[in-house]
Length: 118
Image (cartoon, rainbow, N blue to C red; front, top):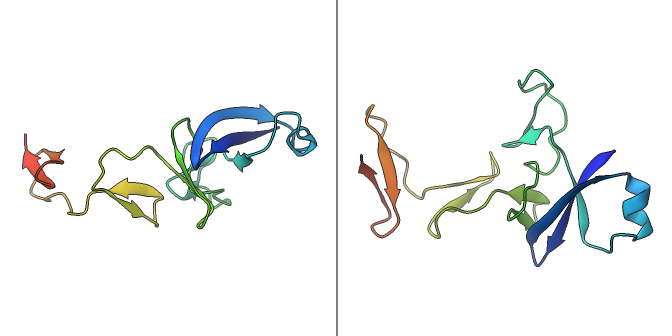
């Protein structure tokens, strides 16, 4: 059995477990794309929760609300802020400005598009 994400207008609306032949039969309609429960951040993880060098399928395990990028054939998690950009290494979203590395805690302020100390 495998996991499949229903993609409508580039957005994941459902995730199911099914056999490939059931998906191929069209029983559930079209728009299903396979996703891997063991893939996160562009890496494949083993049962021990550590990267194991396996094939990372489509960047991330798809979740409802995730975006499917058909050009790169990957799933991106929900975008938290409009200004954030795709990170094609980790298949996630990142701020357009790196968070300061000074040991302090910061939150992203979308109105100023900057990190604000908390």
